[in-house]
Length: 470
Image 1: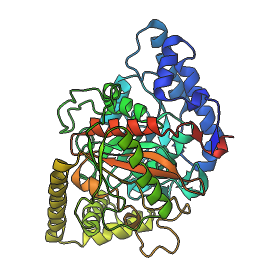
Image 2 (image 1 turned 60 degrees about the horizontal axis):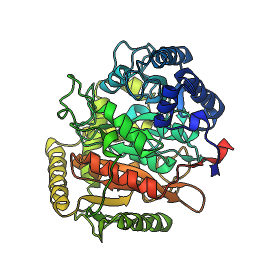
Image 3 (image 1 turned 90 degrees about the horizontal axis):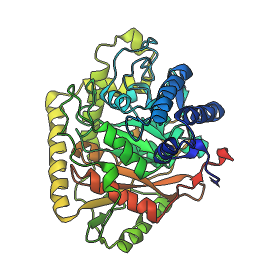
Image 4 (image 1 turned 180 degrees about the vertical axis):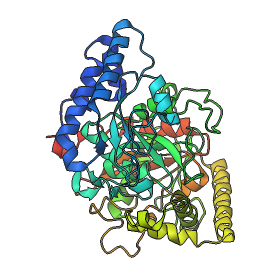
């Protein structure tokens, strides 16, 4: 871990925006600084799989002119953004980590990209994902393995692993992720960044995800303040998606006056059934002191549901089977064999087995709704283990074959559709990040962000960057 003087590429989006306004530097200079970082470090982590510097610098030049004229489109005008290679983006191919996808540039934007474009973003490039975003680590037949910036021998997490690896190295202050079982929060926890899974439906998605209704779009950033800044954009409504009504508040604004006095917080280091690494357990329990200092009412309490792994598997792998339904055997032979395996398993489920899983999803949603009548927030670890060896789906000698068995804190809250954020809360003795997950009731994204922001301000780790930046 290293602490160093801030360079342009290490600045937050908010800091960049302030410098654009004062003329300290331009969006073009910010974009070039991030591109320089990509050229220097991407070979070590494989965060980006596609770059197009011409598109990037042209967008940055247009933003530079808007700031010169005093007509920026928004606070993120000119800020470089890393785009997960699963979002449809005009001018860029959408490979999804698969050799079966087209290399041709698209002519339409997904809602998240359309919103970013309206607000003047600068696209840095496409970040790596497992094939069709199917697992909690990032490797695929097209792009290879993505590694952890704190230790390149370890996993970055997934499926938004490229975005998670990019941010700590200054390869973009803002990054896009998707999350159907933890795919924002897993790499956020392993890579030491902030990752927010919003309330389901807050941020529009189109085309509809194969993993609906588990899937969410959300931000990945270095600070909670930047997460709120990006969420304001991602939550803009889009007619192609049945999203929630336009949010009446700015998430950026709600961070200006944070008061957690009297907020009722439940701490559950194990959810009542998870084996947790001792260092992670201790780090998460230690976060209680910060919230108690803020006047929150704190209690240790489990939410009261058993592990919904079997039901999640049916729902999630059913989505994988849906994504592959039109792919024939010759093409399947070119794909990640483990993806094929889980999709074929799910294709043999009966309708009643799938509906049984939907029933458990509804029951857990009810349990959590009642839980939040007593507690405003729930705190857990983001992950029960530190990052393990890169190139593996599960840790060596793990007793199970599939990735959800080591992500028990994330997928239940995809089933319930609640907002959940991962914020860094420490490091293991080997220097790997530890994540704290803060969960709120549906539609309480503002409170979740306020709690995460308060914690990050009271126990800051943002001055610490990976050693490879030395």
